[in-house]
Amino acid sequence: MNTIVNLISGPRNISTALMYSFAQRPNFKVFDEPFYGYYLGNASLTTKHPSQDAIIESMEGDLNRVVDTINKAAQTSNVFVKGMAHHFLDEHPQFILPWSNVILIRHPKKLIASFAKVIEHPTLNDIGIKRASELFLYLKNSERTPIVIDSDELMRNPKKYLIQLCQHLNIAFEESMLSWKEGGIIEDGIWAKHWYENVHKTTGFQVQQIKPAQIPLHLGPLLAEAMPYYETFQEYILKND
Image (cartoon, rainbow, N blue to C red):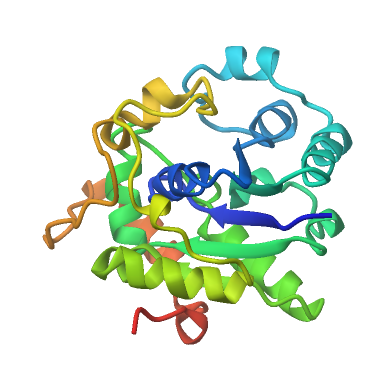
């Protein structure tokens, strides 16, 4: 079996840009949130997601079949799976243990500020940081400690950071990972129209302006909830050296 890079992320966290990056490699097949339909069909949700019914209807909702599809693809190509941490509903998803797991984090204040532009009243489960922390501990305790990357570290110098990430994944870096065509990729999920507007305007990693994130007052308690989970990752983050 070839390499399966399993990106475990929160929303609004340049995970789509990373998927586009790996999609430029001829030796990688990418999957955009393949567990989303399963998640929407089985999770206890407090907020309806954009295009929720269409996602459930159009995607495979059986967890084992989704996993089988990914593993089957890895028989003929390397695979990159872009996924959200909270889409893993099983407390201990054993099927990810053989995969090369990467956890992508972002400061919760920036994440919440961006997320609230689409869903006004997100919960701790919606933003994924708690579940990402739980999955990190599960993998670490299973002696499969994942690579932890931070969006701010990546954006300091995307090429250097991707070189480091590829080294940790035991794959060769390719220059093609740094750019893509404007407008998205064929593998985009049907939810792209709600979430991918900004990345569709790009042709590569954009160095972001450093400015303080502002969150609505009603989301202050959510930020306070999220911060302890974010702090648990700090000593494990791959630094952009």
